[in-house]
Amino acid sequence: MKNPSDLRYFCYCLVHKYGSPESISEEQKAKEFRHYYLRDLPPTVKALRIVASCCGCNLDSSDRMPKNMRGFNHVVNGKSNIVIKDGDTLSGMQNTILHEIREIMEGIFPSVYRNYKPLKTSAKHYAANKFATAVLLPEESFTKKVYETGFDVIELANHYSKSCSQVLLRIGEVLQGKLFFYASMYEPDTENNWRVTYWTGSSNDNDYEANVYGLDGFFPRKNRAVAAGSLVEMTIKAGKSHMVEHITLLNEGEDEGLIAISNPVLIQNQPTKVILMVLLSHNRELISPQVEKVEPVIVERFHQHL
Image 1 (cartoon, rainbow, N blue to C red):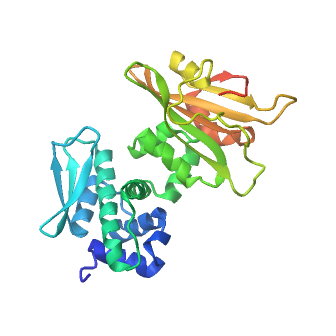
Image 2 (cartoon, one colour):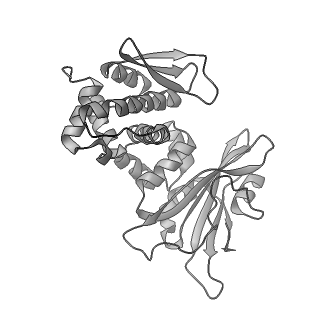
Image 3 (tube, rainbow, N blue to C red):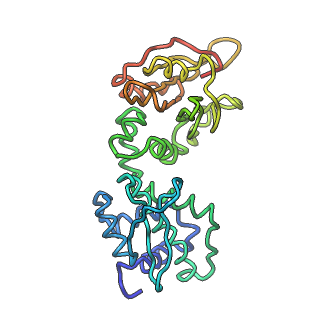
């Protein structure tokens, strides 16, 4: 721990400041990592290569990886090595470097905090994903951009050069407890059957009345197929954004209900992804920047379906 740039020293500093590693959130780890290594500079691939070296990790690449694998880390002659996939996207390389650094940190923590029990494989992978995303999409500035774009996942993905799925999930993380919303991404399989591939959401912990309860199955979860007559189906068929201004939920009388917008990612004028965003009707102004930009086809109302 003599080298103040070494990853082991960084882990020691985290423990010294926060206590047990299990009590340090991935947001806190990411914030400290940005400040310690990046000094709030953009986390470009070039910058992250330098950071990996400062952390005491060799960085290499390989063209011999399975399709579902983007990188890994291993120890050679007592030194950590991070291997990334040849030909991967810049965003993919950024994520992989940070993901592997976080996994290496998990192996260091028990040596700097004796009672710490390392995360098991699946939990470690999940934590590494959250850490990488939190470094690349800092909570404060990202949240500000979410509101500026009117919750436009596609615009945010283009702005940050990140995948729509990563941006979608990040919105759920940074807004958790602050606002009620639901969002999902639909994609076609090889037989052109569209299903939910990612989804996220949040409740409002500050105002329990500003939430929707008791609607089991209403909000589509992963692998749910596109429903006939849904907003997403309309978007896929027309290749254009659609918006429903009032989704009533009660069988009797009028209720405030929900508002939803469905926005496609187009390649050669054909939808390849569709992003669905749902908010309470009284929060309509939050998606106004997105509505003004995409000029969706307006559907007046739905009842108990999206």
